[in-house]
Amino acid sequence: MDGSLVQEIGTKALIAGAGALLLYWIYTAARLVLNARGINPMVKQFFNSIAAGRIDAAYLLTTKTYRQHVNRQQFISFLASLKLNRFSNLKSGRPRIQDGKIILTLKLKSDNKEELPLDFTFSKVENLWRIERIAEVKN
Image (cartoon, rainbow, N blue to C red; front, top):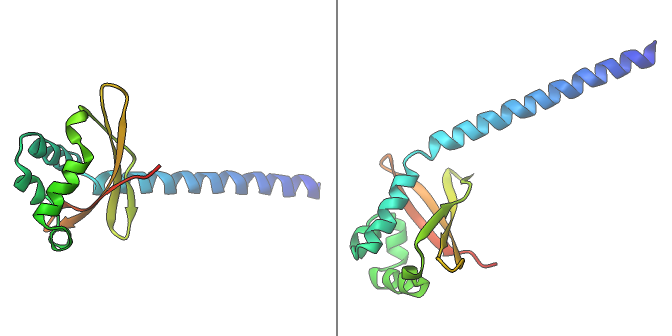
């Protein structure tokens, strides 16, 4: 009788733990989705600006901190080194929250299946998302 009581309590504890884990996961996912609103349109605006040759407009979508560390000429050189004109498709990865910032890996894809993964770090500046860091992901 004692063994079955322990087993029943253990099963209930396992179900309660799984339920708590599920609720935590749903809460975290909902918070991430709500916090990340506005990033996708900004990313689209960033790449559309570059494609249209409006590099200054794309540069202004970065934070002041980014612009203090990367001047306009360095930004242009970085974009040129990526050879973005080879890519025609953009795939967004799963966003991650770290220190109140959102990190998103974007994969640029070409027609010949070439991929260029880039990590973008976004932070909010006056309720608008801005790019704080762009880094090539090394495989």
